[in-house]
Length: 346
Image 1 (spheres, one colour):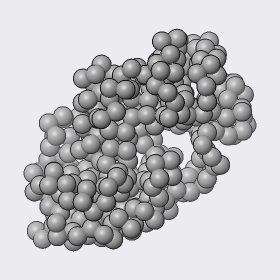
Image 2: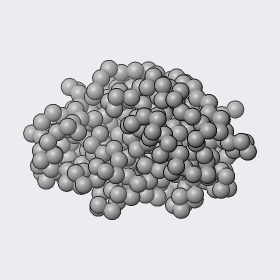
Image 3: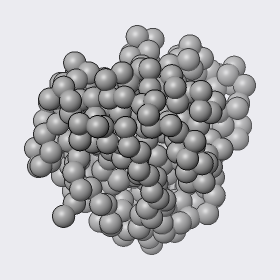
């Protein structure tokens, strides 16, 4: 097996900011390419974030340690076990390899990944939200106008101007369904409940994501769940299937991201575990190209909600894969029919 990897810089259409820090106009990801002796290719991507103690530098360092001769499209499970011996943790780095391995394995089987997993994919049956990052109210209005074609918006909150920003959104789009993501921005259960009760008065807020820090005492989050007038989804609280028991106590649903689960295989397990525990499921993303976004879309049949808009928040996606016109996920326009169904944009 031949391994190639490189970093690319993605340019955002708007400055991106959430509750944890300052905004940015760019994001960097690592692209992995595996080539088998028979010429079969697998593409993968890593979009690491500081919140989980990963960075472009840690991903590149991980890639440099990998012996590609120990990877095989014929045995993804054994290949992942080998990657666990390279370094503990580092799910974002392993995510890129898992996606590439699954891409190659499905290509060799002559199937798209969703059929390789036995899930199938129903065209335009799933809807992704479009995320509006934290900003000044006048910029929020511009972002909402630009997102007119998307029927569901996701508003980042957890800053000092939350009420002004929702007000600005509603000036442009009075009745559109909105999901709210606090990214751990509310520090006490009382503050969180106060904000959620205020949000509930809007009438068109679908749910609230990660209202409090994942490190919060589970008893406090369970307290909030019991009193919340809106459903609560855990994101930073839910990494893998191992977290399902505690999340079932604290939330109504969970947000699965492939960067947290070390790829498609772990995402498949995390979604199945959540559904078995009676939790609603959502698949989310970071700022990503169509490689990672398409990888997430292959898990559509295990998902109640999608927030995989990372590739439409950027202006220089190098790849073609799943599309989301008017929010509806579709592979119909993807030139590639096998594996990830992703190809290089020409």
